[in-house]
Length: 278
Image 1 (spheres, rainbow, N blue to C red):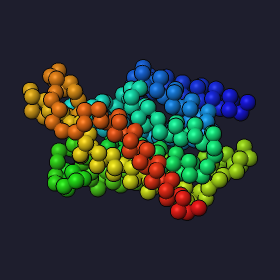
Image 2 (cartoon, rainbow, N blue to C red):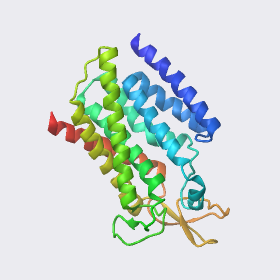
Image 3 (tube, helix red, strand yellow):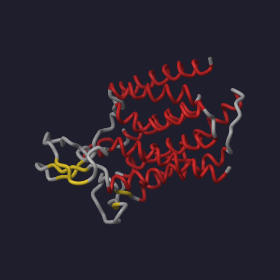
Image 4 (tube, one colour):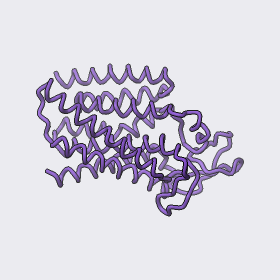
């Protein structure tokens, strides 16, 4: 019965938030469907603390995507997709967390809780690093060679972006820990891990996962070239309307796949760190 209530709550909450985000321009129609799928799974199988942590990610990342939006519009030609998230982006950012929530419902384990923290911290860290890092006054550097590159280049990092990634990880870790503490007080559930340790593994897992995201972006992510504008982009069809040519990377590894794989990496790193603590 409790699982059914949580699943229904997940549908209602994710549906309402998805519709609100759609009207605000943060989600496309398919993005609303993705938010409902991910939200229902995480709320239903993980519980309230897990579901509200997902909402923390979504709300903060959506707000940052609109922060200084006019400045970021000049970078639209580089990124595969804009700030209006679609189904693919919703599943890429929340898919790993949803799968972990299902596994946790089958077998509650502190390592799975840590993995969820790492996965969500990674996607939040990556979003914060992207949304704030592109506003840095100094040009970013490619993670593999440390040479200066254009703002918005896949695999580029900056000091501001790193600080934003760390802050994004801490926000997720802090939110999850705070919500678990409240859940234990009002619901009477027992937390199966040390809460301070959970913040630490979220921080390290999220930061490491976001750096892995940058590494994939600099090496094997699909990057294209527009023969008309002579610019690199993640798009298969450039903003000018010209089909682009693949210049490096694996064609199947687009930005959504990079985000999903990186969130899995952050989850594994957090789980391994928690294993060392237990």
